[in-house]
Length: 149
Image (cartoon, rainbow, N blue to C red; front, top):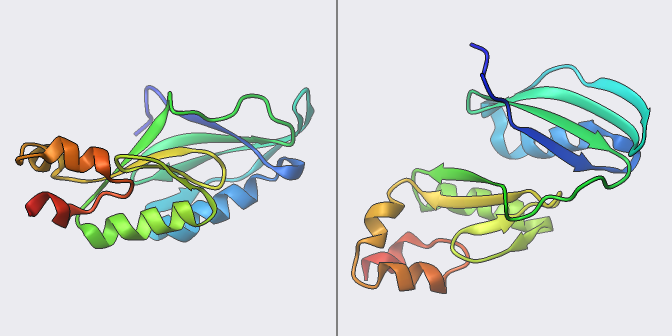
């Protein structure tokens, strides 16, 4: 099935080498990630460039990489990664923040600057607990157990 709208993510990578981006995400997402053929675009106003289509959890994305910064990622766009349990939260959080940065309330950014919200699938229920919102505001990585105290 073809998406009516396909998110396009633009990365800045030395030499515009998109294969580095693909390997990075393939490592953490495993079988949930698949990528198409990398299409070299050659020299553009943003330097050497490549693009390809990928699928992540069945959703299609378009990726482009250029050697020179065109626009950087920021908090205006993030990918929400809904997790089944604490183990899954920790796996993604640890991977993305190893070379990226922690933020607040389950937000982090990976080594390419892409923003992620790594949250449990029952976050709306946890936020209804007494002090649920204040617990979330005090956290960087979401720790489910803290809401159950």
